[in-house]
Image 1 (cartoon, one colour):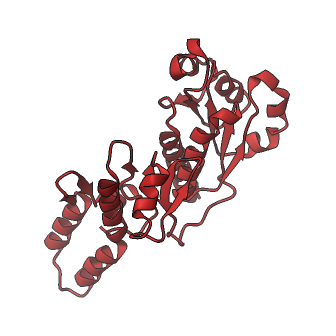
Image 2: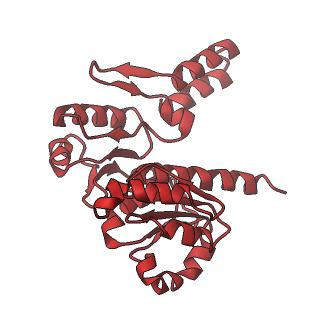
Length: 262
């Protein structure tokens, strides 16, 4: 479902060429529209329902499968596109078919940034904070996701509790942010610290960074779930993408509420 298709239907209704019953049926079909490719069932209605086309999770897909899916989404949507956790090899295989595609090595993301109508509000900024440099790949996945969703995003990297004075240098950014994503491995304590410094929602992302007893991020996940700081939510281990989307939705909800306030 593209904006052009929707506009054509609405113009037909305005011109009296489409009845109310027909337009309701068409909109319902558009919002639930899918296309079966045999190995994948593309959700073309997601852009209409959620404001962003279906995002492709790349691991487990062959290069050919990813190329077909991504090209199909590119041709049937207007918005930005994401293929998460993609390899450079997958990117090189599809780039000739989709010249607009870009690969971010750190975030491991193939994306298309083509929505020029997005107005990123600097007064509704998302801040991404990491405990260490090793957490940056997950943080970059969150940052780029939130950015492609139409948000202004800034970062404060490598300011974990082992040298907590580094965090305090960023108090202005922490206080002014609308939503904060905290990415940390090891014992995951940074989310509690940041949660105690702000009245803004904090999205904690545990990472699999750490030694043996961190259990590939489980220790950080449990610590974040057990935080005593109010207003901290937790996503899954290494799920930068999920944190970026959640932050974008919180930002969007805040905007609508404030725009509707007299």
